[in-house]
Amino acid sequence: MKDELAPLLAAAPARRRPSLLRRWAKGVNWRGAVCVAGFLLLWELLVRLGVSGFEGIPTLAEVWRSFWDKYVASGKYWQSWIVSFERVEDAPVFLAWQPQPA
Image (cartoon, rainbow, N blue to C red; front, side, top):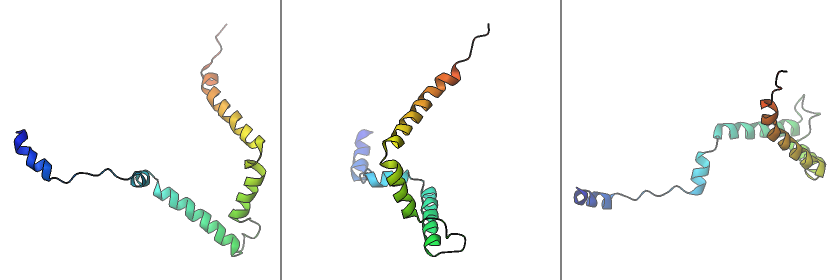
């Protein structure tokens, strides 16, 4: 039986493993990514074109620059992340604890 399959298996093309980029792209939620990119593009265009109702809204670049200068460069910002993660770690213990009836 093995001898009969040997020529067939030898003639079959070898399946190549997909590249890392293809494997990554397959796992991306493209519909969600396109929606987020579309929202950001629309925001930038409406603000830059001065469409009525969007005059007081800052551009995406201004928001990013402000976030970077005020928060990312600040040690307090990262400390708040650490505190938040510690709270999340402790939450299951706190929620599972119940006082014993007297």
